[in-house]
Image 1: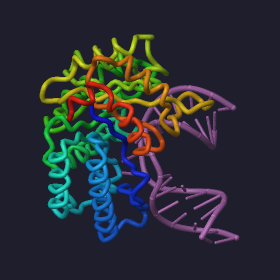
Image 2: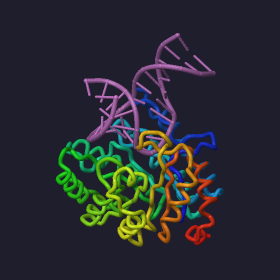
Image 3: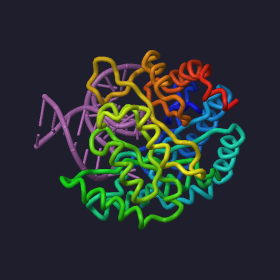
Image 4: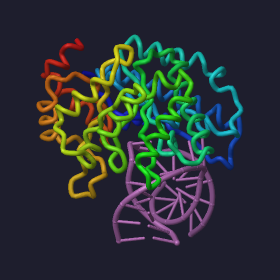
Amino acid sequence: MRIGYPCVNTSLGCSSSHTFRLASYSEEKLVLTVRSNLDCLKRILNFNAQNGILFFRITSDLVPFASHPINTFDWAGHFSEDFSELGRMVRESGMRISMHPDQFVLINAKDEGVFRRSVMELDYHVKVLDLMALDASAKVQIHLGGVYNDRESSIRRFVDRYKELDHVIKRRLVVENDDVNYGLADCLDVSRMTGLPVIFDSFHHSLKGNGESLAECLEKSARTWRADDGIPMVDYSSHAPGQNGRKHAPTLDEGHFRRFLEDSRPFDFDLMLEIKDKERSALRALRMASADPRFCRQG
DNA sequence: GGAAGTCAAGTCTCG
DNA sequence: CGAGACTTGACTTCC
């Protein structure tokens, strides 16, 4: 088991998510921004490796407007050395990487234009991981998408569209249960039809699930991961106290997390903590989990 | 310098 | 019918 956090490090005082307004786009601004984002990402990966945090989600904002037609700059070529170095850092530390395109990426969109733009965005995410020369265990996770008042045909449209995708996307794509539209059972159905691995999100499951136990969910989602995919990824959070249910916790709830560790035995997986205070909670979780035999196997 | 409003993209829910 | 939510705030303007 590796433990990780998404996108942002709150201790280092730098951000790998700098962007700017479309209206003020210029090639110079793009180069400066990406330069700054990549430098910060190197610092974050260093911090993670030194602190034993061996799972990390890279922000989708790393390259602003990467899939937008305004951006015709060859950023992949211009920064190829930096991406190579980042990839080396990841491999040498035994780290695992994921990315999570945002809500605009909809494989099952009714609108062909939305689908086309979604593929462009997936191309960008996959390109980042490919430039880092990471193997197929580095994943790009998405949700099944919208319902459009017809779940059945919307799921079918996802499956049909998936088949059109290029291999470079297919080998990295994984689907995650969401908290509103499609639960774990839907993702497992889609997995049977496509072969896609399923990322189980325990927090989303608590908001939209059929009452399946944690063990059942882990077991069923784990079976969708093949050897090349690496061990399963799992997303974890608890909800903010007294908040409406969908909000993520501001910091790790140690009682809740201890129960999660106990209830998830003996399954092994890499765990992404979606918690507001990021690496601070990841470090606390790491200390708690280091007594766990699954964690010790990592050395 | 800080507060407020806005930002590429889609969909759904709630008030 | 607009705001808020989503994996994540950051940028820009106004005072």
